[in-house]
Image (cartoon, rainbow, N blue to C red; front, side):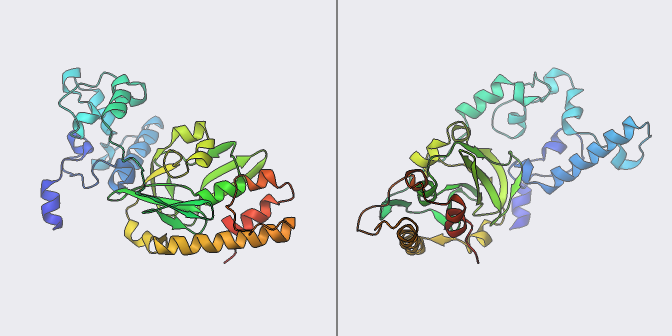
Length: 305
């Protein structure tokens, strides 16, 4: 199967640029997840440093330069746009010498042609007022994961966490291209001097950060599972990571237990009869001044093993 897959695979961008003689792409041009791309970039960077020190480079490794540098020296008519190299469009010359961040067409391409899967769950379960979407995976640290396509997922903070901690003032994440790991901090929020970090439900490379959420963190509270998603990840070992997550009936059982634990905690901490058959409110930390931020985190977000 792998031989057939490789036979039909397109040429790697490094090969298309003439930087290497033969290399196919088996990552669908997801270069940030490609070991070959990282290895060549490291070698090219080292070559640049050695040349600046006045050293004469020898051998095949010494001839390596970044693929962008190879193409910059070509005539404009032979300098293809990266979206053409990836097979997305017919030939278009690159007029920005591969400085895509300053390219209006690159922005237009992403706005008009990049297809996003709209995260619309089939339905929601209501767990004592806590919204729980069908078809999403849950991590015990109150983050969620939704598969978009193959090994691409979106992740965010669940409704339970946003209800107990209230409206966030800021959300910070690692940058695109950075790796996050299952069960390790990946999403950082703050509220009026209080801070909290949430675990990533899966391991992967960040392919997108939701700029709407970073600009308006309140989206997580208002719509945590659709507009309020935080990161998009490419997850090469997704099947293995899924074994550590909850799904469907497990989600409902887990959330019922969490709500029960919260009601017990609220009654002990505030002397209020929380479990009176009503629904869980929002912004518990803001509306119940006696609550300890650190205690909420320890009991519900970063639980002791």
